[in-house]
Image 1 (cartoon, protein in one colour):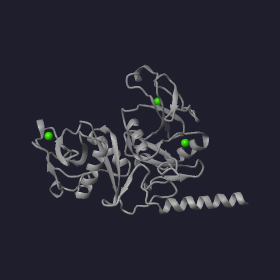
Image 2 (cartoon, rainbow, N blue to C red):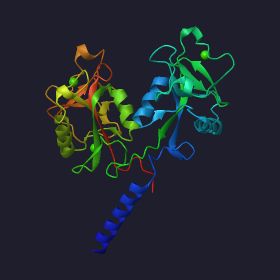
Image 3 (tube, rainbow, N blue to C red):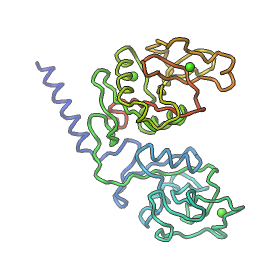
Image 4 (tube, protein in one colour):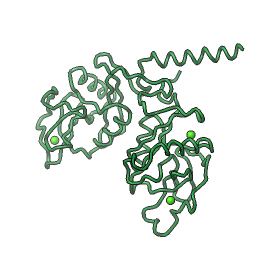
Length: 314
Ligand SMILES: [Ca+2]
Ligand SMILES: [Ca+2]
Ligand SMILES: [Ca+2]
């Protein structure tokens, strides 16, 4: 009885703290002046990778839209010794020379001071703006790599206690205790891996028959005509033949908890497939496993996250 009561109180406390917390996710820091959360990505990426990763984290690639934001971005660069600068969200990748921030704010509305000799659109091949620690900007080639910052404006979006994310497409599956999101817009396996990671989870790992059934049922809710991907008959999951020697492991390095392959699968060893190779894992609509091309065509995919993966550690 006492034990039950304690558990009840603890659950209540936990839910209250989640609901009242101004947290967006543990890896972002709130700043009052800019009314939003910030996160530095130190590992340099191309501009497009930066934009996609911020988006998948529920944020945008940050731009110095006003004096407060510029100050925060300069401080982050200075305190992290990022002398080469960072990618801003200001770009002209959609139409040459038409610069806007990722949010769509036109360049003319953004207070920008240019570095000497910039912008020069060098070799007519520069459509992304780099911000230096001194606050000046320069146009650079979008395929170069730089660190970048993601920003999430506080819009009163509430972290749902059930799955611990503002992303309402995640739902809790009571049979497994995990949350899942079905991505009906297809990506390649490696893109999908990044997307799930940025959302605070991982490509779904089937730990046993119950979860295999839950995932099969989830897939059934999305008939082929609701899926925007090249392939609609299979879904990417979190396992692969990492060493390309028929050793299938999950994205967490475990042996497969459910390994019922479909008829004639895995079939990547066939001669005709050796070039493109099927080294990435997934499941057919009928619930059995398939080895799939990693990067040849897009498929829908399922992310799995534990409800506390984005919460600050207690
Ligand atoms: Ca330039
Ligand atoms: Ca699982
Ligand atoms: Ca196959």
